[in-house]
Image (cartoon, rainbow, N blue to C red; front, side, top):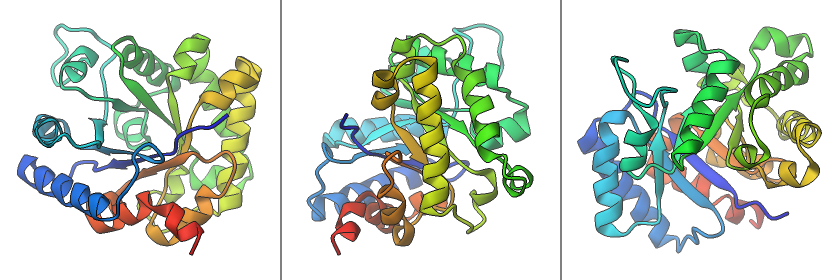
Length: 262
């Protein structure tokens, strides 16, 4: 089954709304100059909440083919939840994606797999595609238990999801030890875990559902290594961190297919 690759740039807590506008403009220009075909590789930016409206205005006004989303989403519809952002609010802003369960949210906000699953299902209910993050720390990797750990997360997140909800989800495998460290899993490392994730999805649902779900790799992705990672059969894109703050670098990552034929 053909799965359209997705390159999503997670800006984390960087860039105010003016800087966001400038980056999106530069990225759009770079991709236009390169004659990028968005039907072959989907491109999304994931700015801070404070910049989403500005990105929306630019994307709509310039009729850009870039998608955008949020770095988190609440499980709640509305109410006395100070600081939370409801999925319906993101839907009104035109968000296509919402990251759920990034390792930094798990670490600093004690989010567990049940919460991540609830956030994903809340997003789906409002037409937003969750990018659900899973991954292991360095100690688990050194023990050789990376597949075991990630599959536990997959089970915990999808245990009450229907096949339709599963199909509406993107999964991002992010080995925690490779995020922002300059360390990167080898293509074989990425394939090992991404392939295991797809295998578990086939067990939880069926092979057709498993084959329809995009699985991304994230962790120090850059233009120099993305082509090799994307050559693996179960890697369908990347969740890019720091490199997505550089429009030229992110544009080069998006155009990984050119590196494959180089």
